[in-house]
Image 1: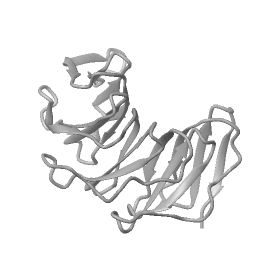
Image 2: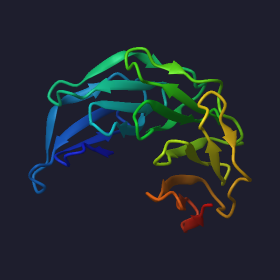
Image 3: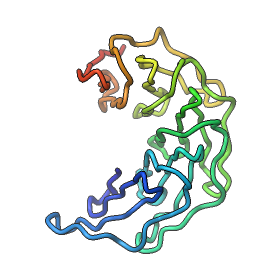
Length: 209
């Protein structure tokens, strides 16, 4: 799910292949806004909204990422063609804070970076980011956009230097300690603490340099 910046609208994705918008102005009586957004042909796994709330990215097990124009919440619409490149289902998407770069992760064990400066013509930046040995789940950018964090079904968290978007590189060794799939990662605003959640139940906190 994702909130619009004003906190008045919530977006949700589902295994029914759709995305829905909800008016939550009255928190006790949320109501759907318009019809479900359809475009994916399989489970919609993740959503990411730009800081200005005007563009939504969605990922799906149909192996694609899609961009949506959300300027008019009553009439959202698809922007351009699906973003293709992953060779398996896409699990997660995340925008950099400046909304110019989108990260996607997938069952093909890779992460991809997209230049979405021109929303109607996104382009891949370099080749796939490889290093994980199993499905890559959550991804998130640091506040400055120079670091990307990823969690994986290989039970590790990895930290990537993405200062050069076309040539990302792994920073240090993978973070190990979990004993099952990693489903969630979150970075503190100051970039010094990383939290990771896993199917193994514990939440782990990591001090970053």
